[in-house]
Image 1: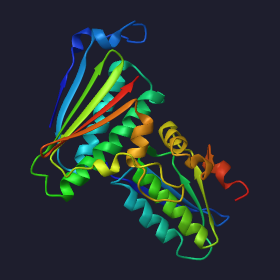
Image 2: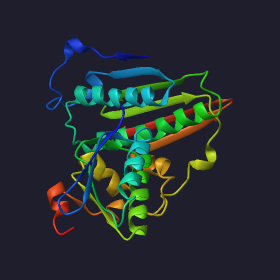
Image 3: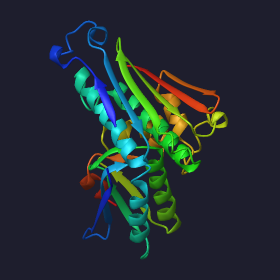
Length: 158
Length: 113
């Protein structure tokens, strides 16, 4: 389930807009539970963001943002499902403000502090790249644990 | 979005696997199965045609690395063809572009293979 907050009536080409993020805030909210559907929703939200900003599919900043979003999103969905926290759906939000995309995930899965600083593994390694990719792709990757709740914050200047 | 994989054999004996969809944590097992099937007989030469892959994640990359190791352990080889911009960015980000030199088209990948 998701919702989109965006003033469609003022839609215009953003290519020539000097400050489009400030003029047209973009917000997308969803609750995620199943992995496949959740990933579909994440990619859909970036498609909407791409449409809103008028950026082409080849835009490197959005590619990097979408790549990081899928890595963190799949980690969150897999861990919450594996550890019996799937009774609490993951809360996802995406917003664009002043040419900066910010996404957040809130989940009730186990803490994952020990994975945050994981380096990019050797080229022959078949696993363990997800968080390292997200860190390289984003301007900021934040994580905090409060009580039983994890909150992730992903920031990319577009 | 599920991943579909089509397989064909060229006249020169190279197997071309063409996945379509997202090569991610959901789709990677399908490609792994197709690769296992393709390397069953003899010394495999594989081209993975990525033209239909819209997106790759770290698990999808892992399946390609597993394929390379499997193929080389059988004295064969593997080439990637036609990655889109997102796949190229991820290969570069992970420095796997040094492990997987990719070809712009399947035809180029097949040349001299």
